[in-house]
Structures are given as C-alpha cells and as structure tokens.
Length: 467
Image 1: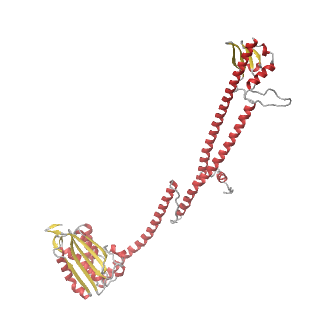
Image 2: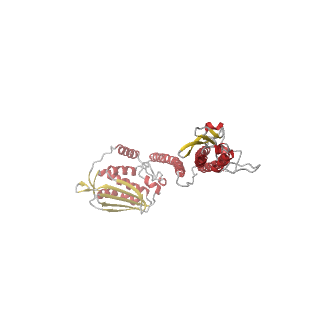
Image 3: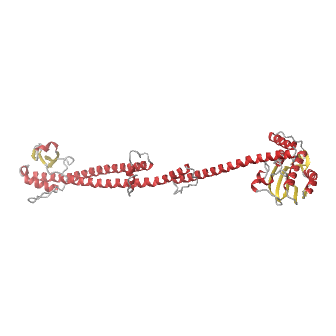
C-alpha cells in the first residue's frame, strides 16, 4: 500500500477501498469492528434511556413528596384562616411557602443569578374548591395536574402543578446533557477500542493465513520442501499440519515418479538385454533353441493353469540323490563340491518328473554362478507336516536389492549377464511355478556359504495321506 501507519488501526483502515473489500483481513476487520460497534451503540442507547427514565422518575417522586408537604401546609393555613384570603392576595407569602416547601433558595442578592437546584419550575397554581384559579398563570392551567387540599375531612381547594415530564428545566437539562456527553465519550472510547481490537484480531488471524498462502504458492512452483510451523491446537494449527502432510506426500510422489522413470528405463533395459543375450547365445550355439522355447512354453502353461501334474507319493530324498547324481560329474569338472544331508522317508504327493525338473534347474543355477573352488549344500528335513529343502551355494553372492527378484522371469543379476555363463532368467521362475503348483513355496535369500540360498517347502504325506 502507498501509505504506511505505525498503528494497527491505521494499517487496516487504509486498506479498505472499493477494490479490496474481498480481502480476508478487511472482511475480518469489518465484521469484528461492526459487531463491537453495534453492541456499543445498543449499550449506549439502552443505558442513556434507562438513566434518563430513572432520573425523571426519581425527581418526580421527590417532587411528589414536597408537593404533598406544601398541600398539608396550605390545608393548615386554610383551617386556621377559615378561607384562602390569607394567601390569595399575598404573592410574597405564596412564593416563600413554595420555596420553603420545595427546598428552593429564599432569595437572590441584587445582581445575582441563581440556577434552580431541582428539576421543577416553581410556577405552581392554587385553585379553590370550585377549581377557580386563585394564584398562578392562566396559560398553564390547562396542563396543570390538580392535587386536592383536604382540611377537616373536606376538599377545600387544589394545588396545581405542571408535570415534570413536560416542564424539565434548568439544572435537570444541564445534568442530563452532561450525562449524555459523558456517555458519548465512553462510547467513542469503546468504539476506538473496538477498532483496535478488530485490527489486532484481523492481523493475528490473517498473519497465519498469509503464511499458508506463501507456502501454497511455493508448492505451486514445485518447491515441496516448504513446511509450516503449527502453533497451538486450533483449526489453523490443524490446517498447518495437514498442509505439511500434503507437502510431504507431494515430495514423496515426486521422488517416486523420478524413481519410477529410472526403474522403467532399467526394466526395459533388462528384458532387452536378456533377449539380446539369448539371441546371441542361439547364434553362437551356447543354448539350444528348443530349450528356450520349451521353457517359455512351460511358463505360459503355468500362467494359464494348464500345466499338468501326474501326482503320486514321491520320496524327496531319492529324487534329490538322482538329480545330483546326474550332474555330479559336471560339478567335479567345475571344481565344486556337493554335500547332501537328506532325511529319509520324506514323502510328498507330487509329479516326480516335475520335481526332477525343479532340482535340475537349481543345480544348473548353482553350477553356472558359483566360482571354483566352491561348494553346494543340499539338506532335506521334516518340519511338522512339511517337507523342507534348503539349497545353498558359495560365492559370489547377489546384492540384497536383487534377491527378491531372482524368481522373476527373464531377470538376471547384472554381474552374471554374459553369453558364456548367463542363463535365460527362466530357470528359477519355472522352479517356483512348479513348486507353487504342488501347493508349496520357493523363496530366495543370502546363504551363509556366501552365495544364494533357496528354500523349498512342500506339504508332506504321512501314511499314504497328505499331512
């Protein structure tokens, strides 16, 4: 804004123009100030009306008591004189009696001007019993209230007076005017306090909102590191916490998007590299074409649920020994030592040819990726109603981030991708599909020998029935 004021009220009043009524701090200022100002005005009106009404009633009651006293004195004078002649022609006596009864000063010194101490004009009237005026001004008789004067049980005349509601004068008006002025000063002070309070509240509330607007603009610009500092436990503090959650979520989404793009690039590179290696392997005669086609066919049948199994009781110890015996010569040639620890009579209901395919794939995987000299350890044991096969080989190992993906089809660890020893990335995927087809599980992990560990779990068969 072009003008700056050090006070809060100046700051907010100067912002109120025809083009800025839609601003939140202006609306808050006007709402709070208007509400307090309205309450102040109502309080002023009610208080002044109540005070004036109470004041007039008080004066009326006081004058009623004094007029009652004057009526008693007039009755006593009438009884003593036997009529009104004693006062009807004596104006000085009438005025002296009026002043004495109403508490007015006796007289004024020459050149001295006295203000009447009460709120009544002492222009009283005296009427006889026929309501003929004896003392007073005829022009006020029509508005006079007549108070009976009773002597010896009879009404002998009337004391007339103009009601205070109609004849407020002198000090009463001066006093009421001063009271109104005092009330007006108090009201102005309350209004000023209302504007200051409204400006302070509007500034305090919108200061936190402005911080929210600033950080929101930062989010729009793509800066997801901005955060608000929640203060207190009100709705604005909760909004600040929700904003921080939103900013953290957006930052995580941005990071995930960046990782996703990197992962997409990596995932596209992996199958393409595998496919290229397989084609080169086929061209160089390293892998027979029919083996790759057969592996893909086996996986496709597994995906469709069409891979058939001829189930019968199978002793896993015998099947493992047969699988290892078929490839022991190759293991010896590669400088790899195979150790078997098999618990006999571990029977499962399975397709023996498919299990032989699983163990052959595992052994080929260990032979292909285990450095010489190395070791392969195979253990078979019973755990309750389960048969567990644990397959371990020695170094090299696999990075931790690659372990969960070893059983994915066409997935190979970067260090093993070469045409001489790299497989198709289908062996472990086929093994897992066959094991799961038998109601079992296959999981990979790091081996204490330094290489890979494969754990296979099958439902065990007891006494010719499935355990």
